[in-house]
View 1 (cartoon, rainbow, N blue to C red):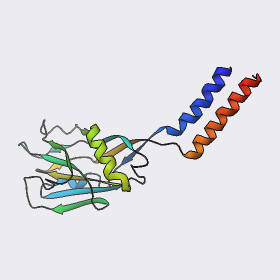
View 2: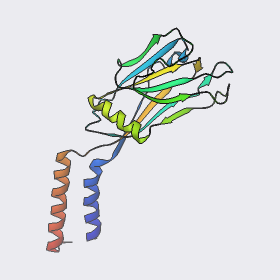
View 3: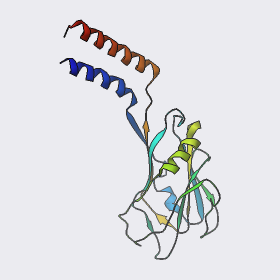
View 4: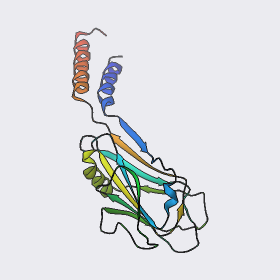
Length: 192
């Protein structure tokens, strides 16, 4: 019984550092079907600073994505250090090349491996180095992504999921510490 009370107190302290996640999606669900004559930026307001609440996992998913034509084409996806909030598209007038070349960090240069397969998702899981850059650039609470399709990539939406290790508030730590002290005091008095 005594050991159980001590474990409960420890769990209460640790519970202040639970993991939390958030999923972001732009209002334009299919990203204007990623037309090859445009480049796209997606500025996201995280509503928290990654300096205070670091992101421990990030996954970018394009749902049901496929190329409109059977040919070698590319979809360039970048992590950018800055962009206007929300989804924006910019006329680049080009069916080739990477509009964001030399900007930010190239996450992937993807080519549709199975043309006309409309049931697949493109899932980009951030590496440790990409997470470090994401946390550095997200210190102001904003992050950005850039997409440049070399061809028309139909899709059913994009989502960006982040998982954070929430840092316990100082008040929660003090309250948990006080609770453990009370449990210890009660244990030494033999009240259990």
